[in-house]
Length: 340
Image (cartoon, rainbow, N blue to C red; front, side, top):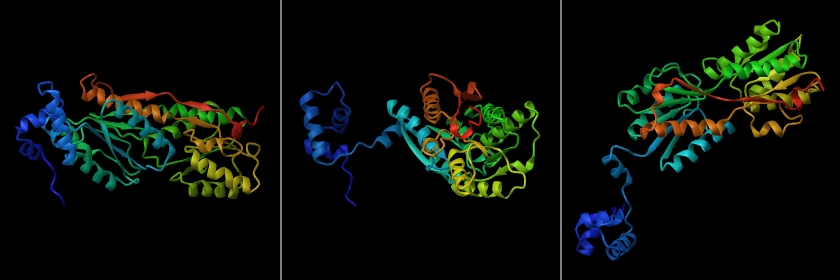
């Protein structure tokens, strides 16, 4: 491997002091413009690269933020990351992004890598099987700010950014009841995670308030994949008493279920009214268009990144609040409109 060019190499060639070269490359006003131009041209010719990492370490700041997400292959997470990237770029921060692939072991390895990479702060959406925050303790000990978003976990020194998932679950279910649905099935994800547990709470609350009975048979816990949607459709077809309403906590899974039900001859919303979650683009591609909850992913990413950067720059203290709650809304489309 070819040796990296240093400021000492440039200084020797030009018979200048390393300090002069360093100041010129950093556009210091004490160095005259002709000298700056000569040094800059020589540095470029020699293939010099500024060692930003080493420079930042001297200032005890790397200007990098670590981000750990469950998976990168979801539209929602893509919008969250787009929001983070937008804010980070504007503030001259870089993001280091990794995915846990829904494994706490992988999440632990990611956290260790982030810590060893000396990130200034960490943004995390936890994996399906994460049950405690021990692997983030090193960040707290070092005073590195920690912020959880979307899928959060209780931590006395971490801040959470979420939507009101109980309210969203309630609104989705109440809408189906108001459309005349009597027997509503709920397809959800791992109930260890706040997002799915809270949406189930909202579902139960709506049933209770509208005088509908709760039935464990109508709760289906899945990984919310395309296969899970197909499996849910198969389960619905096999039921003696089929549901006339369906609330799925993920649009991708809901659309997969809708396709299978339509192929089996179900009329939507005639036989079964359906509501999804996230307002993914796929919700407007399926026929009929899918009623869904609009989840402000990009806004969540922006607020998460901005809150962390403001904390790092001393403009705010994120530890003064436990939770930041963002607004979501029900978007009614044809898949659930039984009443004209």
